[in-house]
Image (cartoon, rainbow, N blue to C red; front, side, top):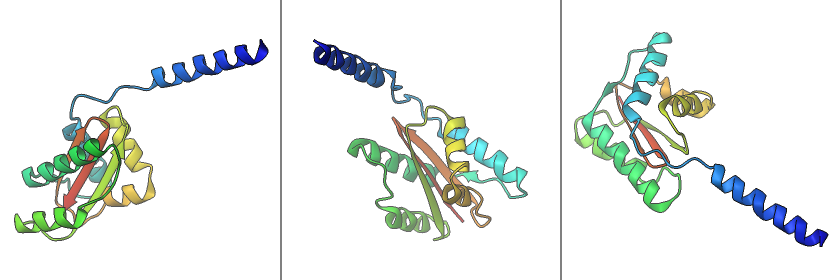
Length: 144
């Protein structure tokens, strides 16, 4: 009987854990995230990043790619950089990806608190950027 009670409690706990997971955001809070990044950059004496339609489209494509596969990755980064260069932007680009952030502040804070991601946010030679969120997947793509 105790084994049955233990199993029942374990099932209830696991059910509560999965129910407690937040659903994927349905709104692209990329523009708000870029505004937070720009505020952060200017507070550090750096120029803000201009939103660029090409980079926004590349970020959106990559977030869609990740969402479709259910995995976070940097697959195709070189190709995105080449597309940016073909559109007239510098060939020097950087990228951050994120998963399961529920709003712009959480996403920005996650990147700011990660040393490698923070370095990308504060690269002084970056001038243009795009940020896109699709479901649980986010991409920041910036070029000089």
